[in-house]
Length: 225
Image 1 (cartoon, rainbow, N blue to C red):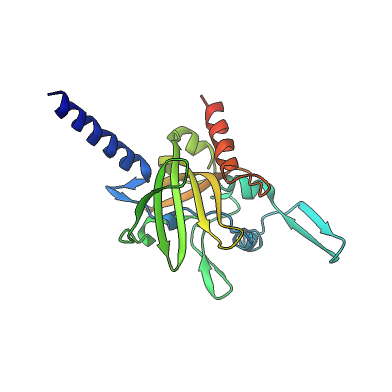
Image 2 (image 1 turned 90 degrees about the vertical axis):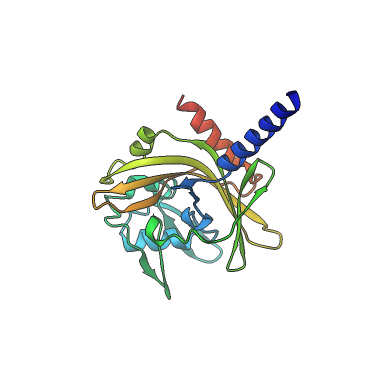
């Protein structure tokens, strides 16, 4: 009897680990490409700032090379506030020779991409290798739909589910994996279409370990309680 109970407990633990490893949508695991983040080059956010005329008032100047670079820290940390306001639609925008997006349409997601459950030192998450690039994400914690709505106050839709995630990809060489923690929400818009929306990112500091943004996210979630 005790042996059977131990086996059952083991199976339950295994099931719970699997269930919490990735974000499920209608019984399927959302792949890594569902969750956009700022590229290491920041080019994707720069394109959105330019395309939607988002004010870039946070500037720094390189005296050595003689140029000034400006960006919007608020947009890059709190993109959810800009959807439905400055970002008036969720369609991908043309950039260079392709289209890029911040919001990811559920209809555009390929759920058939193979994935593995791996541990990157902070619990098990979803690992994939797509077009030669290693990607990984892990659920940090669930976020209430009420707070999810607060993070996107201008978006005409309903937040159905939200999580804080730890998202990373491999950049090779001495750079290795670069992780970023953020809050994402599954929204259903008035037209019935569903999107994964990046709502909030937590500050990156490349002088600190990859776990830094995860710690900042945990502190933020704790402050909500």
